Amino acid sequence: MKFQHLTLTLAASLVVAAPAFAQTKLKWAHVYETSEPFHTASVWAADEIKKRSGGRYQIDVYPASQLGKENDINQGLSLGTVDIIISGSSFAAKAFPRIGVTYYPYTFRDVDHLLAYTKSDIYKELTAGYEQKSGNEIIATTYYGTRHTTSNRPITKCADMKGLKMRVPDVPAYLAMPRACGANTSPIAFAEVYLALQNGTVEAQENPLPTIEAKKFFEVQKHIVLTGHIVDHLNTVVAGGLWKKLSDADKKMFVEVTQEAAAKASKEVAAREKQLADVFRGKGVSVTAVDTGEFRDTVLKNVAFEQFGYQKADWDRIQAVK
Image 1 (cartoon, rainbow, N blue to C red):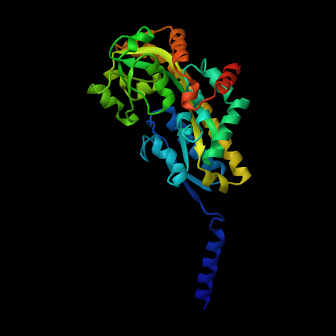
Image 2 (image 1 turned 90 degrees about the vertical axis):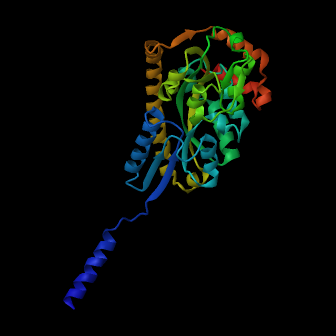
């Protein structure tokens, strides 16, 4: 009887000692390589949320399209197959077209202009519009890099792109500059771009310099042309189903952590961009500056905001942000 009593006492103490909460496991997905700041910042955020929540949240990060291409993971927010993603506003624009105006070429002057925008009233208005339409929540924004063009033939002016077979993401705003300059665009999945360049399916593509480095596009392209046509960014988006379940305190914690992570990644990307032109030249790749004003004027003349569902008034308000 004494042994039985001792066993029951020990069992009861173990129950009392067990955690008083159920751990919530979450999936965080993106399409970027493990070497890129967007992944390392995501992993840091996942660890930090676990730490600050006392272990109540276990977030597993899935990089490099492991849970699907960018369109798939955006859909996954509504399907319940993913809880958190980092993805561009170009995909958010599928739910709320107005937010895509940030991808209209030459909307932002530079990274400082972009980061100032994320603290502006127009940013709050556009992200709120997306949240209302999609049910999902944008809680942070990261500088992805300034997009430039790579090609197997030299480009010094907009007209040099006429007839160029160019890979561009299957997002309307990305098509604006290449098509205004006469390129023939092709929507090839991000994960398949290197092979398409290598086998000649396309002759050119456009991405920020750190992405050109990470994806090794410089190995299969002869020229990098500093068109600087889009100052790009990524949003950290939480599925509406998860967001509704979070307490106010946890919502605040998720926002604080992801915004800290975004700041870390943004700083790292901007610093690396400053180094890369010389790095590529050292690898034998031609890196050429062009008159971006000529490209900008061509786009503004030939591409109407309204054809993408954008509002010129939104663009003007962003232009006015200091």
